Length: 350
Image (cartoon, rainbow, N blue to C red):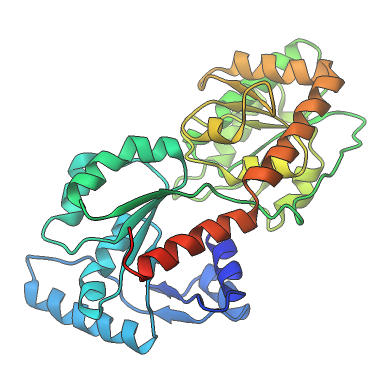
């Protein structure tokens, strides 16, 4: 969602974006080409074992922030937040931390021990705020707490009805273990054993040091379904592949509030998903999708089977999914909510 936020702010009359990164990379190069200024600077963690070096760097970074005319800093996680807090304090710049995953109290205490505090926290789901707010509020009692769900471009991700001779059931996720690809393949095996003629699309690639695609390919072979599964890897344009799916499956064991589900809902796709974390805040069970417990390939299989057997149910859930995204999770709604939090923070309100 970082790029969507940068793009939206670029069109704002008073809130111009600037990206701060510790080193240049594909994302910073990409947004720079789109006209967003980028500040590349060291962002080491404050070290109280080296107080003089930490203080010197904080003043250096504060000077860079002032020269860049930064009025507010939004950080992607607590580690990034901790790196900028001393300099932000010196420069008089409020800091917001965008939370995507739960954190434990001990970790929170380490992050904020003897440190300046952020102005507020923004959570990507209600469930995440409820799980995480208490230790953050204890460590930062003056901070504000807001929930802003992810949003999707409802014009770009518009309804796209598939016309497959053989139904396509897919999963869109990087290949981390928590995304549940093994469960997805076990689900495919169960459906195959029931003589369902389906092709399965795994859209997403390895993002960690330990590659998993070869492991998953071998597992599909061991199940006897390798010829029914296409591994697409990391793709630049997920929209085209998502448009070809008849059913999207989210098999995640842990998932804050996945953009892939919103994109599928916007494209009017029928969805079977695990009911973990913030997902039920997007998908209302049996109204705009089917929710099942995590770690349960049989439940995934049963949900997909219902949709494949009942075209009217599949279409009704897909229609309702599109309507829900348009009314609740548009990209414009996402930008408007962030803009309100920015303006409130800049004026010192809670």
